Amino acid sequence: MQKFESTKQAEAVFGSLFSILAEDEAFTSALRENDMTVRLLHTKPECRVYVSADAVELGEEVPERSTVTIKMACDTADALWRGELMMPSAVATGRVRIRGKVAKVLELIPILQPAFDRYADIAGEHGIAGGK
Amino acid sequence: MTSQDAQDLNFDDFPPEVRKFRSTVREFARDEVLPRALKNDQDAADAFDWDLVQKGHEIGMTRAIVSKEYGGLGVGVVGVALALEEIAAADPGVALTFGATMLGQAPVLLSGDTRLQARFLPLFSGDDVVLACNAVTEEDAGTDLVLEQSYPHARNVTSIRRDGDEYVLNGRKRFITNAKVASFASVFGNLDGYPGATGLTCIMVPLDSAGVTRGAVADKMGYRNCLGTEIHFDNVRVPVENLVGGEAEGGPINIAQGNMARPSVAAISTGIARHALEVAREWAGSRVQGGTELWRHQMSARKLADMAAAVEASQLLYRRAAHRVDSELPAPAYEPAVAKMFADRTAIEVASTAMSLMGARGYVKSYGMEKIVRDAFGSRIYEGTPEALALTITECLYEAGDEDDPFE
Ligand SMILES: Cc1cc2nc3c(=O)[nH]c(=O)nc-3n(C[C@H](O)[C@H](O)[C@H](O)COP(=O)(O)OP(=O)(O)OC[C@H]3O[C@@H](n4cnc5c(N)ncnc54)[C@H](O)[C@@H]3O)c2cc1C
Image 1: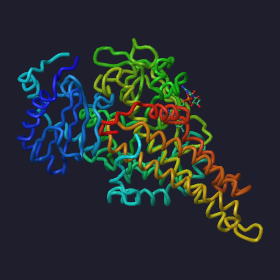
Image 2 (image 1 turned 180 degrees about the horizontal axis):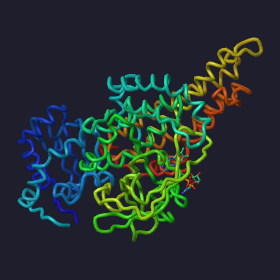
Image 3 (image 1 turned 90 degrees about the vertical axis):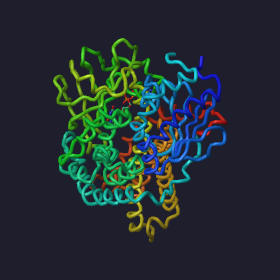
Image 4 (image 1 turned 135 degrees about the horizontal axis):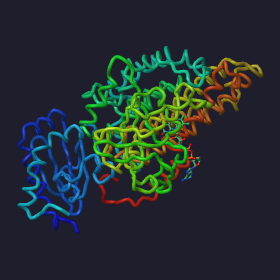
C-alpha cells in the first residue's frame, strides 16, 4: 500500500518541505553558487517540484529543464526524508535516479539537514504517518 | 537507453581542466611510459616500476577521480577515461595500475559515506604514491561475481562474518591487479548465512592487516606492466567502520562500480587500438614493396581505413558512455557495456590487422607490435567478458521502457 493517496497530498508535503529549505540561507546560497536548479519528479502519485535559489514551484507546469533531475516514488522520498533509507543505497538500487551534475548533487546532501529534521512533523500534519 | 543528453558534450572540446589534465598525461605517456614499455614487458612477471608509478602519481593519476574536497583532481569519468586512453596508447599495463587503484577507491566514492571518504580518500594525495586494488574474482567464482543473476550460483566465495565491532574475512582472491603493491583493497565477500554470493558485502581492508598474505604474481601473456596476484584472508579482522554501504548491500555496489569502470576500460582498449594504428600507419607509410609505399596498395589502404574508423568509433562510444556515467546515478548499464564490448573487440582486430601490415616485423618482439597484440587480448577479460557484456546489453534491450518517463 502506498502512503500517499493523491497528488494534492504529496504536493502539500513536499511543497512545505522545500519551502523550509528555500528559507535556509545555506541551501539557497549553495544553489546560487553552483548555478543549480533541481527538479524532483515524484511518482506514485505524480508530484513535481522545481526548486531554484529564488522559488519553489509545484505541479505539471514546472519548468522542463533543470541542472539536476531526481526521480523517485513518493514512498521512497518519505523513507529518505525520515532517515529510514540511506541515499547511497537508494541510488545503488535504482530507487532514486539522478540526472545532471552527479558530483554536485552528492555535495548538496549535507545541507539538506533542515529538511531531514522537519520532515516527520510536516508529513504528520498532512496525514502521513511513519512506519511502513 | 538510447541517445539523449549528449547535447551538452562537445567531443572535440572538453572542459579546460580536463583538457589540461589530458595534455599533461599525454606528455607523461610519451616521455616516461612509452620509452620503458618494451623493457618492462620483458622483465620478470613480478618486476614493478615504482619510479614510473610515482611519476604518474605526481601528475594526479592516483587521485584523478577523487573530488577536490579530498585532495583529488575531480576530473570525472570523462577525464579519467581520456587519461587512460593516453597511457594505454603507450602501455595498457601502466594504465591499469592506475585504473585498478581508482577501482579500489570507487566503492568508497559510490557509498556517499563522508566518514569513510574522509578516512580513505586523502591517503592518495600525499607525496608518496599509494595504490589500491579491488578484489572480486576468486578461484571458483569469476563471472558469477560479475553477473547479478549468477550470484546465487557462486561457490566458495570469501566469507564475511560479524564478530562484535569487527568483521572477520576468510577466503582467497585471484588475479587481483595491484594486490602485490597496494596498501588497501576493496574486498567483496559473502556475508555468512546467505547462499552463494547473495549476501555480497564490500569492506575496505588494509593489506597490512594480520592474516593477509599476498601470493605469487601471475605470469600473464600481456598487461605485464601491472601485477595480478592472489590474496589470502585468514581470519582477517577489520573494524565495522570499514564496511562500505550496508551488510549484504555489496551487490549493487559491485554492479554500479562495473558500470562506472567500463567506459575507462573501453578507453584503455581504444588506446591499445590507437597505438597499433599509429605504428602501422608509420610503417605502411615508409615501407616500399611492389614499387610503392604499402598504404598505396588498395588492400593495405582498406585495412588502414577500417582500423581508423574503428578507433574513431571506439573513442566516441567510450566518451559518450563516460559522459553518461558522469551525469547519471545510478550509472547506466547500457552505454558502458556497449562501449567496452566494441572497444575490446576493436583492440584485438586492429592490433591483429596492424601486425599483418608489418609482415615478419610484426611478429618480432623488438618492433613492439607483438606486445600490442598480446596486450589487446587482456582488456576483454576484466570488468566483463564479451559474454557477460552481451547479457547486460541484451537485458537493456528488452527492459520495458516507460514512454512517459522523462528519463527515458
Ligand atoms: C589483466 C587482468 C586484470 C584483472 N584484474 C582484476 C582485478 O583487479 N580484480 C578482480 O577481481 N579481478 C581481476 N581480473 C579477473 C577478471 O575479472 C576475471 O578473470 C573475469 O571476471 C572472468 O572470470 P574467470 O577468469 O574466472 O572466467 P570464467 O568466469 O570462468 O569465464 C570463462 C568463460 O566463460 C564465460 N562465461 C562465464 N559465465 C557465463 C555465463 N553466465 N554466461 C555466458 N558465458 C559465461 C566467460 O564469458 C568466459 O568466456 C583480471 C583479469 C585480467 C586478465
